Image (tube, rainbow, N blue to C red; front, side, top):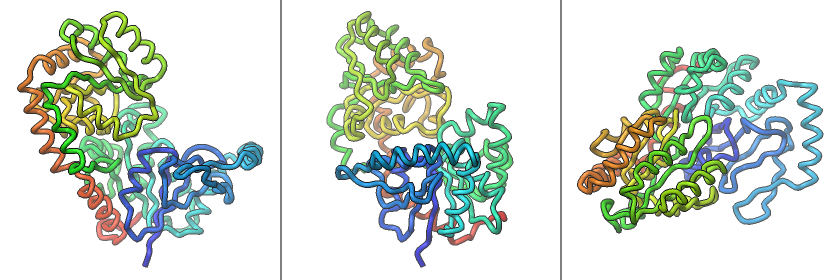
Length: 404
């Protein structure tokens, strides 16, 4: 019998898209209840094979395609739902909770799966608290900083504890976060640890990643995030201190906000090192190709799970320099297959960059080791199997009896 899975998640997220893609070919009826936004669903243009549910109205999933692979609501529909949303939200603040409960009662999912905690799991928790009757088994997936950072903030500590004490299953990308979840009171079944966004087609990438030996590459990749977690400007500061050995190199920055774009232009003007800031819309394959041209890939943040950009560097043979807040220590050995650095210390980051630029043997050996790691842990079909195996294990109910 075909089983229904209800995802409570962000419909516009590429991470959700990649998760759902792993279920292709499986006999599941996938529904998605939006954990963010208002009446109108704005799904990611690559999202397919999902029945959407608005957090406000039963008919708010009236979305049509304007181009292949692109979904947009009509203008009139937007206007009508804007006014409906204002009225509903003012008269019924918990409308999202009630809508989620109604959807659960209607479709009777075999599993409710919250992808992310601060929006999706908090919403699901409220729905479960007020639910009349048995609540379906509940799986919570930890994204990035959901526990590692937010779990240290007073506003979130009690909420996170309530979620983890109430859910039946928990999945995450880091062994670190299993321990943290247990410290927050989780006593259900922890699922196997692996990346949330799936793996890579290693066979198709192998030729490109091997075209240029890492020691012969002349590109440095820098993740451009500069926000509550990202620290790209620290990376630029460290790179500027290495200007004396950057002759012949260029820097590529991706996912950069305006302040990083300005800083990058000033960096190029001050040092004479060419900088290319690529747009947010750059296709994933092009990002992978740039990692395949990079000697070093730098990613810095004060909090993360396993960074996707870090895994891209591991796969494509670029020497990863990653902040110590992203459980990179579960993938690489510091000083051997990459560097693990404090996210806000340009002195230590400078030393790591200098070491990677001056030691050809180090970066070539790291690429060899990391390719072996990729084959063992990052093959797309392997991770797809682990994902479907996880669902099958939960839906068989062999591990725990769902809390009621």
